[in-house]
Length: 439
Image (cartoon, rainbow, N blue to C red; front, side):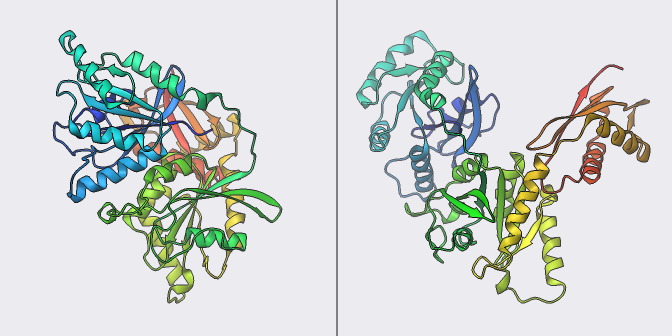
């Protein structure tokens, strides 16, 4: 089941990012005493009392502005509000209620969402009465907190969990269909690909980038197997986000990837790998989802006998962190090599679920250390005592050593690469952890 989404919104400089950092337990959002520092939504997983949820930090909302940056920030915040299961409206208890707070509250009410009102910067007893004036927002009972000092956050988190508890109690039907997220930049051909597989124009297809505005789940049966294809809204560069119709949202890509078991990363053959492509691919890689790189519109490229090899090399260079991912050259428009996609999907899913016995892993590790001696530091040499695979999807390994500080990153990369090579973990990321253990 997808985690509930909680969005923190409010006018600039009320402490949204400070609260965000406090709740997720690490300093992710940039915190400065300058309005407008947080320009995009920042997303992280949060947990309280064994309840997990996704937290979104948004840029400050300026209700009346013609500044392009603040217009973009408002659009981002509205998208977060639209997607959220719970909205935290944050206000400044020191400054008191402002006209901008009223405007933001009015905007939120139009969405008819569950809202929790947080009055921030209440870090002394003589400020507690300041919270009461915020009843006038018509949002509900204000909760006094100090995000910076951590005051009142326990009760505040209890109320968050209380508000989203129904999302944990829903019993979902077991769905064993393989879920495949189709991600990529706008106008790369995601909807065209899905329509070709379906054999019908079920999704909107247009040459205008950004036509797909929401994630769409589509059931498809291919070669006797049932799948769910998740078509995501194309991710767009920040400078191009100006119109409300542009449903830019990296949250949708993240949510789609988290719900998927395999990711299809579409790249435009005529453009090659862009910085935006690398960012999208990184979402899947960081979450340990097996991926397939799909080079679409291959029919539009002038080719010779070296074109494909050069393109593969360029992709490997640009996506060096994802060198395990298979690459397929297709044309969604003509249907060229569509069958290869599903064959590869099944392959990478099987690779991600593969488990190697402890005995074989330790035999292999012994060979790896003979081939390349472990590093040493200040006269002490790294010793590998024991290794084991502890999880699948993605394959996850733990190696116990005498001193983890002796494990140089280059040697760890060597061991990871040898594991992948020896046991053929092609198509899936692997996780590799080093732990200390006495001999």
